[in-house]
Length: 622
Image 1: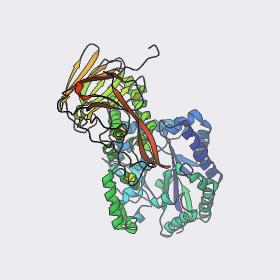
Image 2 (image 1 turned 120 degrees about the vertical axis):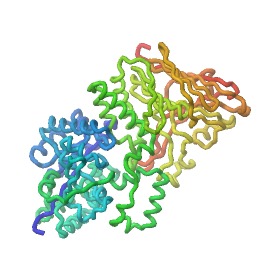
Image 3 (image 1 turned 135 degrees about the vertical axis):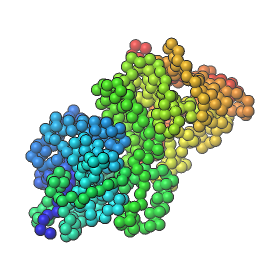
Image 4 (image 1 turned 90 degrees about the horizontal axis):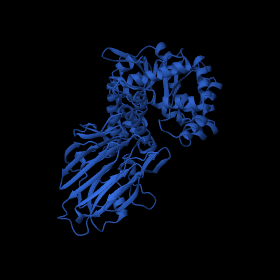
């Protein structure tokens, strides 16, 4: 016990692409600046710090003085700056070239701004896959932070993890530092004395290292933490408590690089695909999450929180792309455009937009809004629109048959220099995305209402249970409805259609003319003719046999739109409109959020024919 315990304290500071300026401003004012300034005044250094690319770019434009302060601390050895993907992507979700590129962008930005050569890595959401070891090594990373959970699920014991480990893939490797989950839960939510007791226990057990690394936002950005951390004095007491341990020679603050260099290695470790424990639970489908909760209740809290608990696991981060088809569609569009960009020489405008579209926050959902926050999804689609506009400049109308979403069924990818649309013959010819480049928006970006684990027992005010949609949302979902169906019953999805083509596979024929591209779909007694123009207009003509439908039945076409757009119907139709809202968990609890608008023209089913159209976007001249 003659040597002090080395303590690495790491902070991850991040705001996603597309977040509001006032959120950036609030966090800089209330979290990022006060923590760093107080730590510096208290001599609570050195620290290990990661500033994400979106936040770095915002600070450069809005608050360069904060970056100057960070730079002075880095130059004086009072903090170590970390790498990551520049725009905070889940590295495991990217093509290999994109992973290395993202890390390279941040390395270049840190060198240009601060004159440093970073070698440690903050692993976004701590999502690990074995092949990352080689890619990180190739990107110049020497060590990375992961959760102790990653080791525990492999059978390591907690007492083994207070030292660096080596891992490799294909003969190329890096060092790993395990973040102590106990410290992550103690700081800042428990009195500092509990952290002191934990650190002393580690030193008494002759452990050489403890690693605390987590989101900086919990030091004043999460609800209730600003008062607790700053106004009630938790942070000052924490600095004083750790300062007393340092003065007594029990603890020594160290950077991650110092810990990797000075603490003897624990040996070789091969980690499975993993993230932090909570993330693996959030990634489960709703029914599986309920089964896991019952299993944990059967095992009991003591066993779940003990060494055996790590062996009871949820799913991997990638399962969010199965759980939410909207996330998968963004992801696969990004992957496809990245590949197209590589083939076309990577024009810088497209490359950077694709990089920004890889920002992780809108692709998943846990305790914070994530995918459920429409402004974050819109920001991803905006960047994808910017990239695709650059890549398709000067192109005419074209159609590709491709399984873009990797579900085993081909979609029709229709595009020109003005728009890009994805038509799914398997889903009755629904248009799953309709990106118009001039508007930098996906008109079909309206989130499907789903049952989430936290919905059980919830009611919005005096309303009934949270609605769950009958079908995944898209443009042009056709049904025949009973004549007496009420609009509010339709909006609550509390009905059964007389007929639905939402999941009817259709045969598709594509014809390209001089100025239009036609997709003719037939199936289930419906003929659906989509006509696209190069400028991004879409008209759809329907023909069906009225025989067999009861008197008063209505043929209905639902368009789930990200926002209101002009809709033209022939003959004139009775149109239902309602706001698509979801109830989802956020840092403030359960919140109701508008996700888009449902527009449903209805005609008497006896007509046997109807048409609906979306005109091309208006230009300033028109």
